[in-house]
Length: 125
Image 1 (spheres, rainbow, N blue to C red):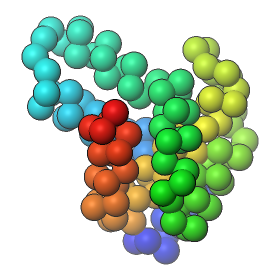
Image 2 (cartoon, rainbow, N blue to C red; image 1 turned 120 degrees about the vertical axis):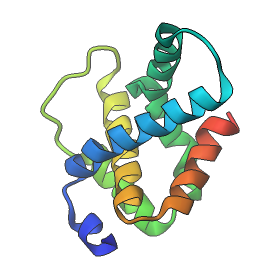
Image 3 (cartoon, helix red, strand yellow; image 1 turned 90 degrees about the vertical axis):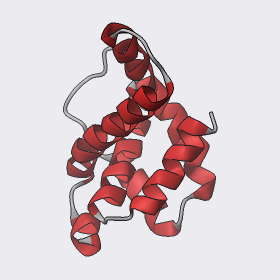
Image 4 (tube, one colour; image 1 turned 180 degrees about the vertical axis):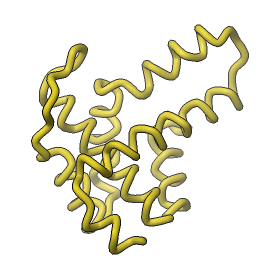
């Protein structure tokens, strides 16, 4: 599947990466916090927002392999058809790149690397 994932459109990778990342965030939140569904939801939204993902993009750039760097940059540079409501265009593009990387790792079944990156950006703060 790795070859298939590397050939996919960066926006398709971001599409699946958005879902994968949100699920990972929700699992993490449920394992650490108690509270109303509304509070849990609000916390997860703050992590999966384009603003937050833009920060994650910058945080992991230095640890990416050449292939991962290629994927994240392809995602960042992809022509998106929508306009962000709560983020700058630059943040939105970085978030798309971040989601593309998550999608690529997931579809490539590189779950260890996916977890490693998640730990760097979420669990280590």
